[in-house]
Image (tube, rainbow, N blue to C red):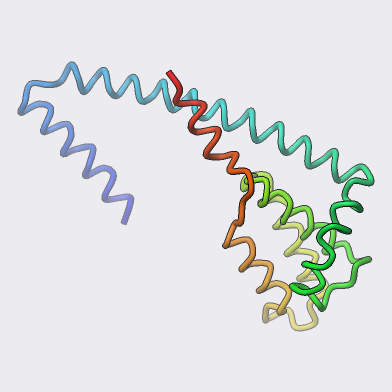
Length: 159
């Protein structure tokens, strides 16, 4: 649907600009929006690389153990089937922390690893386990304390 909607908007904009003799304004806005898009993408890449690096450092240190201890009451309630020693437990904890920090892009690889680990332990490979469903619901909610994506958008659009 969007494949038809956006080209339609563009075509209508060009026709409207031609009929109102506003081609100069249209050209200027096209080039300005391209410039703004590149700036926004560069700021997203910078923030994403920084937080991915921080998450990798956390995974390599003992900080992950401290984080999982803080999250353990919530994790026991939400995921009663998963044992604390399980690899998926740490991956889910890291994903929840990344989502709380508003790092949707950094949380995605962690979430995929967690789902893969949960699937390896799943007895019935044709159906999702309760833990997998709960994890999907939590990721879909995307509860954030620090909305870094919004911060990145706003900082890239400053003039």
